[in-house]
Image 1 (tube, rainbow, N blue to C red):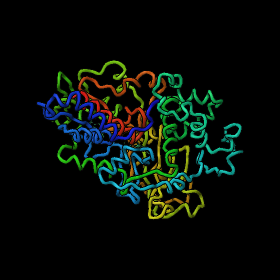
Image 2: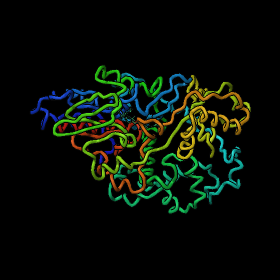
Image 3: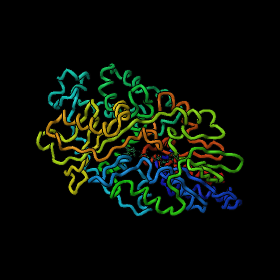
Image 4: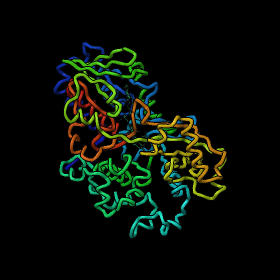
Length: 482
Ligand SMILES: Cc1cc2nc3c(=O)[nH]c(=O)nc-3n(C[C@H](O)[C@H](O)[C@H](O)COP(=O)(O)OP(=O)(O)OC[C@H]3O[C@@H](n4cnc5c(N)ncnc54)[C@H](O)[C@@H]3O)c2cc1C
């Protein structure tokens, strides 16, 4: 039987014990080169790996391309309520995140009571608000049978709960017996009796994984939902966030590294030969170590020259793994326009505003401090081609046209395209149809002295917890091999 959740400390202690018994006892810890291990990237996975190695006595350096830590965890602290432009909810089963917050003195708060307001939104198709009471008989409602009563965002998560092919065994996603499910979501919907119009409505308009149901594996989505449902099973009313914004966690982890962490070191090349590996940065600096752990997302790693080239399935993973297109606009309202038009504060649209979600992060769970527009898939593709100022104007104009009571009251205070950011080149990893079968067994294998971590390499978790899991795994690999 597979272990469903292993505590982070338990894993580390056993890895350290194995390492000590087999290799560490017989070899000096200090390498002849600059450090034992060079970690590239100060996101959650790289930071976790670095701390785990340091705690075992290794000499570690961390280099980070941006001028901040956290990677895809980014809290907008200059906007009321500190909305997140990156990693949001910390689930009850995020053992490593919760442990790390405690270890580095960051307080977590339960935000579950705010969720109902975040998801309170009106359906908007073709620029028109369609009230819940009108939806069942509306001409745009192409669902059939009992689904006709459901708002468009309901069937997909509902089916991924009631008909999830993995059931509760989310870790089965990487077992070859599941590879028959490594088909597109489009094919999966067809197998459930959906037609093209219903797939469009239920999946493609506000596409959480991929840009359409064609380019994501139903096996990955089944894993994501089965794993997500497990979080709720552990503690139904618990979703955490770090006090002051989730970025407090990587910030605290980065601070504890002191002068071992170097910012603005954009790696452009990684070379590995014999017992050493080195990373070459855009500013010409070179960092050498016995081993490198790269946490660069594969979509961004495509732009880094790796010598010798990575062959086989791992090479294909680096070159072709999918990535979520996602851009966010963070809007502050000068006046509560939703009180004037009587509509719900949020909007679920098929236009450029995307999925507009209220952020109730004031003193009371009913205080709306800002709105986050999630522009995903094709909406992100459209917005990302516009100059930022034009994109912001287009989003505001769209919302104002839908609800005139918002006119003149909105300001986009935060804007983030993850796809246009060269240090991420997109948001979460997307396993495209056939990719689980092709490279799940090799996704996290080392290439000579270079080891890989990052949420895209996680096997048992996704998101922030997946990043932590992968950092921990990479540290163990290094501990056992150095
Ligand atoms: C909008 C959004 C919402 C999300 N919501 C959730 C959520 O609710 N729950 C959840 O669990 N997860 C969520 N996530 C996902 C989660 O934030 C990420 O999976 C996680 O933070 C990834 O961590 P990582 O260490 O794998 O990668 P990253 O955070 O991307 O870290 C990689 C690091 O490498 C650096 N780097 C990249 N290229 C180079 C280079 N060439 N040279 C040097 N450094 C480089 C980057 O700057 C970065 O710091 C969300 C993400 C986003 C963007």
